[in-house]
Image (cartoon, rainbow, N blue to C red):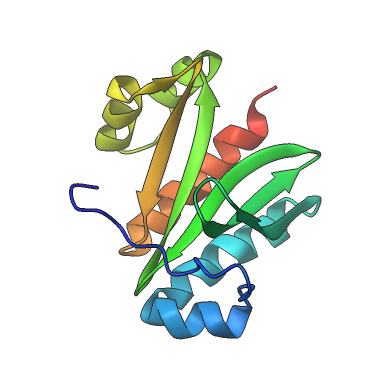
Length: 143
């Protein structure tokens, strides 16, 4: 995230719809569908909602399962970003996982927000969707 990313859903009056999202993310629609289909196939109790947040002046998609947040999603021009927050107790699970070394390293060296750290993935290709799917499974497996 070297340059400032511009999130496109900043108008409180325009709630994101699937058609609008797909018109903005273009060919990344296939990555969106892969992630959402994985969730609906494997975590039937997961559900997502769009909410407008005044602090960031933008709409964010929040995916939850049994009241536990799995991830946050924001839409940008031509793509989208998925962000997970993990507590320190997740560190050994993440380190032992099949995640790419760069994802693990970013987590280990990432900024702490109290006792949590973020793993954020900008969707550019299929490997990014696979990373998100691995992170969904890790998050779902934590107590």
